[in-house]
Length: 279
Picture (tube, rainbow, N blue to C red):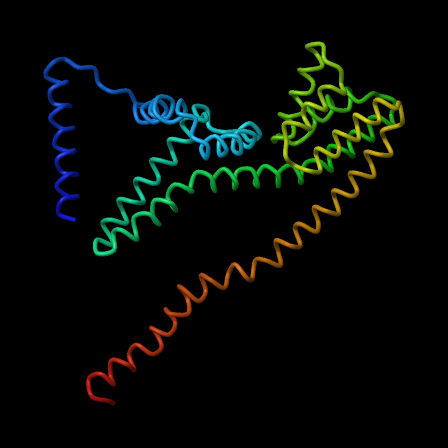
């Protein structure tokens, strides 16, 4: 433990001396994104070129997820992988500080937990995206069915939703479909591309149904209305499930924070009196 502390202090002192030297030599002040740039450069130069099997499998797993959700402006795959290293290092350092006696057990566990934080954040972002899509798709389908029953085509229905629908990720996806059709692709190809870009099952089913209806030349309005009603029912079931899970989620903070506090307030004075010799 003393050796590890000495190494950390030595590295800190070396960085301080190096920074002081750069300042004396007229060195350039680091930019605001020097940490993200360093992480990105480390991953690009040291990890990705080596073709590590487990890293390649993980990259293939998370790449579609990163393409599906809206990430921050400067977030890319190398930076995302670098965040794993950063969070693992921070949580590992905290474990070393909190559990100096069990460092060989606490450090690997803490590093594994810290390194998995960006992945779970990505899963949470995808789940949030799917929830927003589930809320928006029924209204889109119902508006599409009304527009098509009025005599307009599929593209006009999408345009109406882009103009009058609630802002959200579904609008961005449908805006991409319109842009692809304006660039010369057919509506079937644009919808098929949208189905491949998303992992949300209901949206993929809707896109495939629209592609099949366009290829067969069948009427799309009844199909859209039925799918909208089915998704509205599914949305209601999802809301009921969340409402049923709420009491279970309250139990943990209730027993960890509230109940001990109540027992402390009620029985704390009694325990102090017994400790001092009784009433």
